[in-house]
Length: 101
Image (cartoon, rainbow, N blue to C red; front, side, top):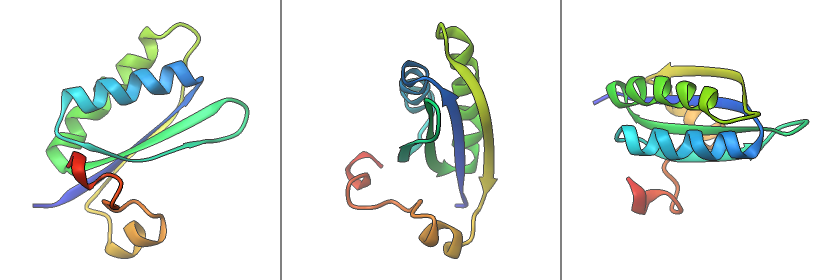
């Protein structure tokens, strides 16, 4: 089964928190990365089967619109990324996320 990577970048912490919660509840995906960008921007990265990431992303994008003050900055999906991309960008299922797979 091929896996995909989905990323959503949002202005404001409440927005990214709501996005992560909604995405993880809507599909069988695992949160593998979270970090701060510049000027109050945050991003999350989820991984899972292609069909599940495709289902979770619109939910996350819609959630941004429902959080006051949140703003969608960017989003994308990489279907079936190469092992090199996953390893170098540290998007794998590390020990801290394995219990949640």
